[in-house]
Image: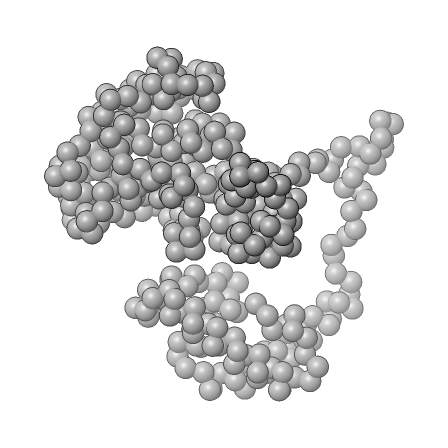
Length: 348
């Protein structure tokens, strides 16, 4: 495979993305790569693959083996770029009529955008660029499905957010055998920590956890934990501790996770006490608060803030405010109703 960090030449992927591809408008790394809380996409939004637009029967180029990367780039270079007026017209056909031919033309004309973004991520995170292209293409499909051409934003600008979101989620899910970015805050820290560290090194600083936490607006403990996750390697628990035949494995030395019988009884008793206390509080709750309590806080499959907002036709932020107010009510009620209750039983 040709080194991706080399200068663009006739043999490099960057050179294959020639001509009109350079006119694609994408966010520069310093702006587009640093996503704020409002820009980070939730897992439920990213995982809604069932809502991807239907494409025309004409096939898009498949992602090839590693040796076929240049052939793939040559194929996608054959798809013509779209004029702004044509792009808007096609986007309206997709939005209003779910037109498969229009969706195909929008997607095929922006496959080069996916490659350019994937190459940038590959240089930063040393991932297989073909995997990144594959995930970026799914993000492109989501962008076609979600795009509103009447908002006055270029499609390539809008699509770059979705492409980066899918690629970033793939990197986090596959950096280690165990996921290292399971919440929105962790994903943002994962994304910005290495970038901020490199920036400080270029400025002549030797960044420690305290400096990084101050620059990123997070606690020092969060920085240390994320650095440990990034620096650690996967270890098999089935590997024998020694070279002797029949030697015990690491798994044999892990403590049992099964709760003792006394603990099971205590948990069950505390659960009964909590539910009895909640029954006293329920009559004082509003309809929305009761819905949030049952469908989000107490449910085994909690609804997201967005889903509850759609149910009541309010914003996600409004639902979050209602949840915060409800939790304060719960804390005040349980502390009064149950003597010596631990904060661990109250905090979500």
